[in-house]
Image 1 (cartoon, rainbow over the protein chains, first blue to last red):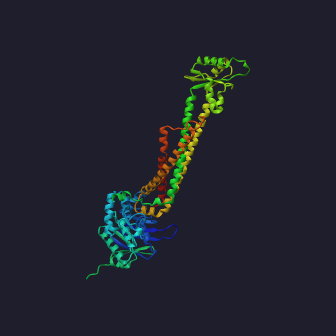
Image 2 (spheres, chains in turn yellow, cyan):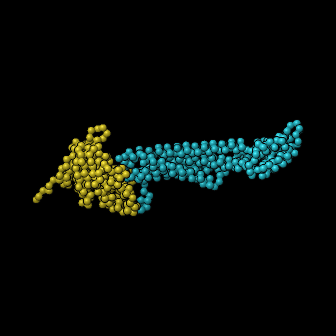
Image 3 (cartoon, helix red, strand yellow):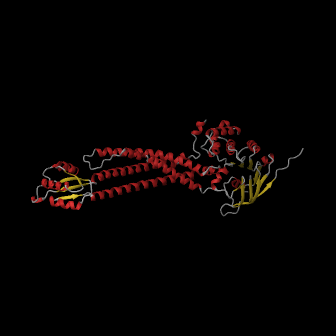
Length: 226
Length: 297
């Protein structure tokens, strides 16, 4: 699914923010990404959702060597990645339905399909009564759920979430994590960057732990017998 | 529900941009000026064609009254010139204009006094040809047979006319080109402003997997809509101006001005100016957006 080999990333002439990153995510896996602020979590996620090209190293995504992928091929790959941005990145002038429909529209889906699927997924995240609401009229948790619905509407192979519970209370945060768990069970590879230790403890998955630009893979804790 | 999507807004809220209003009015002005320039070029072309076809293939003989009475009377010299002309190879017809005809021709310049019999008016002979004419030889014969006769083959007139209409055409095309260039720059400015204002949305769409063409289409739809709106306003104003000029020209006493009317196909061509402006805007918007998006990874 994803393979990083000795990947480094620097912005301009600054020193590297990510150094010698190597890991492999198998299809259908679930990982948390942890680390202090400024450790490079967002930068690593940006490499994974193809917002940046690495300064060095090799990235293989969906079996494709990213160094050999041409620019016109990138949109197709990006459409296979769902991203939940930390600030939600919803379009304020569009309704919840239109926001969720964006990936389908880009993929050329018909209006009827878009309506059906978007309505269904918004109901699934508990926003069936807010289909035509503008993001500015929704609460933080509701906006977060619209962002999640948008990220999964086209059944991505890889789902990346940057601090998805950062702006919501613990109850909603827990509910969102259950949504990600359900997607994971459907076969989606999930990576969630978070600071929320309680959630990490509750959902026992391996960590990609970043420390000062370097990555350590922390396996899931073995389940206690008893 | 399907109707909801059919009426959905664009992914980019471009309609709210201040440059949207600016582009409508700048396009209206451009189309107004371009339509007038094209209409002017068409009218001049039409007029030149009429004059050209009226003068080419013809000659004019002018026989002036001679002072002192040494020569034969004017009427006799006219008859002698007609005889020479009708026997010359290449001449199809030769017709002497009456004094009344000549007075009518001069009326725009001299007024009703042109018909005063006391004025020493020259006599004119209108000649049509159907083959090559030895102009210098014929002029020599006419001078011998009818002293004071001057043969005009319109060559100088036609050369001047063709050079004038060529210059007018060139100027009109240059003007349309300049207007088009200004229009292109306006669209580039507007699109770049839109890209800058909505940079975050553009980047988001890009990261979500939108192709460059998908994003460019949003801008294309936007500027084509604005250009068509502005273009229709500009066209309406230009047509009203042309109708006003035409109406005013009909009221002139003397026909000093050429006929300022256009053929139906020319009106149809002018009606296509807003469409041409919209197509130019579309191509410019696409080029500008695609070029800008190349900088994204």
